[in-house]
Image 1 (spheres, helix red, strand yellow):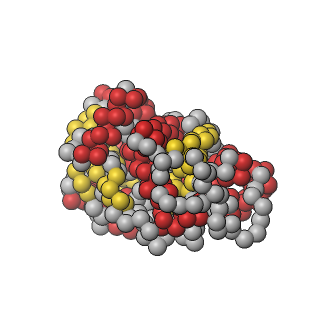
Image 2 (cartoon, rainbow, N blue to C red):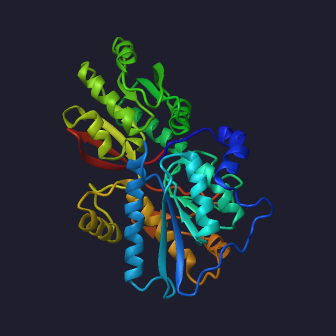
Image 3 (cartoon, helix red, strand yellow):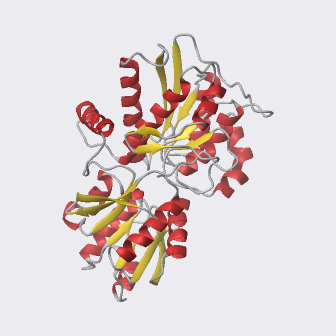
Length: 386
């Protein structure tokens, strides 16, 4: 999940971006990559630990670090301890590229976990690829992101998957014949969900409005919506704006269901909406603490709560699984190229977010949940499919 910026922009800006960030020398991919050291296996973290998307990155850093701590306590990988080199990309795509360069060329890591967002991941993958180092993003969901990227792996479902789920849910579960679609037009993540929703939804979209990330006043658009006949509002976007939209809509007396993707996930959404106004809310998640979970997921929940004294979000859980996927692929590997090859062969790996298998493009389809929130608390979660 995951702030998205157009890949076309990344492509157009690549020369300047990579020059500024210290690009790995051009030429053929180093297929052997970095060697695995004798006593340690180096893994780099490239997360949004500060900046506008820190809620996602800090959650993922915590989940990833918990996984490392547990693996090391259990004896490591082939008797080798994991050494973490943790870098903050500051929620900036250029910084994500620079961090990757540092990790793969200076620190000589054998794998990179992160970034959390699609725009940062798109910027980061080129230098990881040239160095022959696999990069796994726990939550970059943009469709087509991995196409032709042999060293990039994605740990969660894609945007189009979410759009179809929302379409089915509002139609079948909420019986919404007419909806308002209110999309973050600055985000490829949001636009991808909206596009898929439009293509899938069989009812009537009575208003198709947009906002831009960073907006804080939604009164004018909500006033226009209020005068229309509709059954639900679908808001593809991130917690910062979505939470404010909920707060202002409820303050204006709009009480219809508000439905979103996994960008609603986290306490920050409730902080923006306020608990008293965060009711009749539905959003997608790749992980749930409110339904019966596997023994592995329960152990993760207990360990996360004990270490951080807070509930894990889906982003923490996805990052935890991503580290375990890398650790599993590192068994017996002599270099980062072999880790990449082993990752590509992953089939039915059982993690805390369910089973993971990578397809030919290194994407995965995971179990998704639709969460029901009232008074700022998730009250129910049900498994949903497109």
